[in-house]
Length: 188
Image: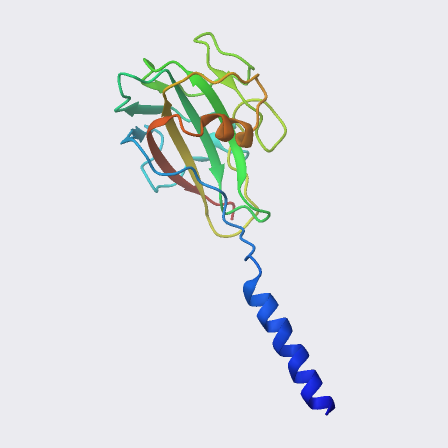
């Protein structure tokens, strides 16, 4: 009789576990929508190695970026750089928003100021600072660093120091084009 009770209890646990929502470590991504933006860098090729100059082992300055394909109806651009391979989950290296839609890129070494002369506003990275913080992975295999560019049909009403999550929430439903450039970096 005890075996029967034990088996019934185990079966109940299996049924409850199979009905429970599954936990996920996948970051929430915005739906794919709109046109595609082309984003490049003169410092590294797509899926190539990011030079140490742009990392914590070098000068830790932002790389030069160029883009094309911004729709005429765009009101602002957003750039987010993050590392999905970080040991504790996606690590944010740069958040910059309200970039003028007429901009065709960002120069090397964007200063770590809350607001730039062109009206762009910088958010807080996961180092806890405003502006760009370069790749700085633990020793081991190369990490991937995604420079994601979004064209929006609005300007964001957020203060400097806004987080990636705050920017993504404010962008929801307003993306009209997007693109991405990925580079890799490893510390041996």
